[in-house]
Amino acid sequence: MTTSQPQKRMLRFIVLLAIGASISVAAQAPVALDKTIRDYKLPSEIPWMERGGTASLNLYGNASQPGGIYVSLLRRPFDNWAAPHTHGTERYVTVLEGTFLAGTGPVQDKNRVEPLKAGTVVSETPGRMHYDGVGEDGVTLLFIGMGGPTGPRPNEEPRAPGGPNVDPTARNAKKLENMVWTKAADGSTFTNVFGDPAKAGIYVQFVRRPPNNWSTPHKHANDQFEWVMGGRMYIGTGSTVDKDKTVSMPKGSYIHDFANGTHYEGTKDEDLWLLVVGMGPAMPERAAN
Image (cartoon, rainbow, N blue to C red; front, side, top):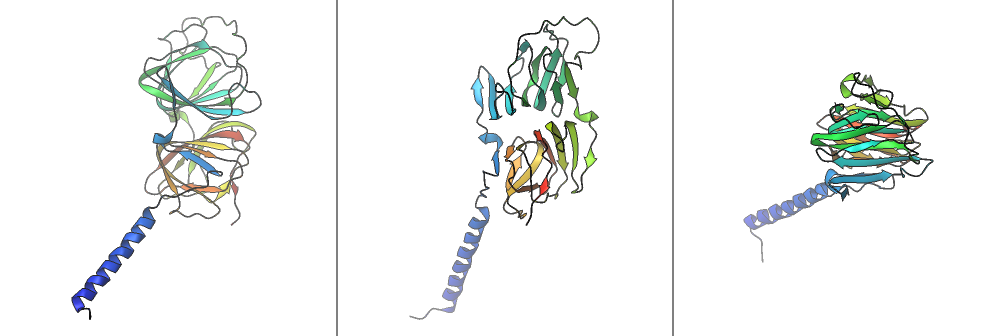
């Protein structure tokens, strides 16, 4: 049986259609990163632990165990208040979303608080009393600190009338609009809000990347933790940058880079605003190809 010319053309069309479909499926296949190098969670994947209207998640370490850092998340609803309390160790709080109402002293005064918006980072002095609440838009917070016991409640005198709402010797709040940014060699900009990744100790850093801006493959001597504050970051693992083998991390995503794991990241068609925290020294070390 011979095949007519129209039939041959139809067969060729079917074959080309099948090839195109297979290419499309391959292009849409999900990218799998090495999670022993870089773990991550999209906003919908974060396993919040709900309790009494609040939600929390411990990301790393243990706040009650001395000798190391801990990193955790907390989400609180409107008009949720914490009574005056203290912490026995160093701690930093970053406002990820919403409004954090910060107060200081041993007496809770809901009219004597400072409303802190997303991008504010607060250093809490060990052993000093403070309290806090939540604005109408709720709040999501990221904590990094040194683990250890809280210690006994200090005998702190009530604050005298007048003066600022927040005592800066007890709670030092750095707002986004007052931060000074430095341009890096790769075209990104950064600000070390507290600490410095080049030095020993806890650091809290913001990084901004313009569109189509990529890092080189690199690693860090210590674990590093990131939260996408705005925009979108594309993350990959390995010693070669392959923009097609990355995972898209939108606002509200969380990334954990394990110590000495080689990885890279960048942007495509939009800006990126990234929170980076960890224990220094943790400056990027360029990976060998």
